[in-house]
Image (cartoon, rainbow, N blue to C red; front, side, top):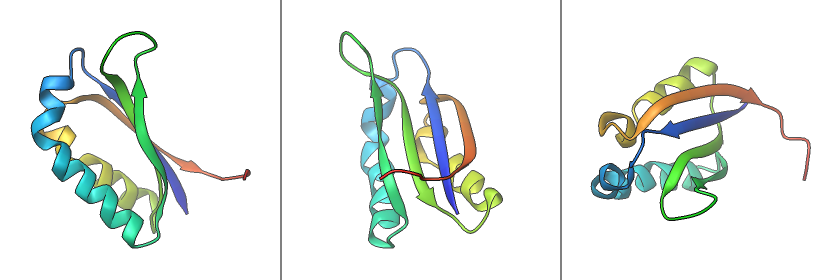
Length: 94
């Protein structure tokens, strides 16, 4: 099943993101290489530099597996995310 992982950054998260970004992207690359990644990317500020959070939609065997994956993201350990929400996702389009 697909799960949406929606993460909200702490204020001024850019300095926290930079050192762990390669490890964060490597995990996404693994999902992609396994054919499990539907979409992923940041939520940019409407005006200005930086981001306010991230979205990952990927296939996991269970809610618990998706939650475990989300909670072990390098951005979590680095204090980038203030909040992470995991929800089942049903893709209708395209």
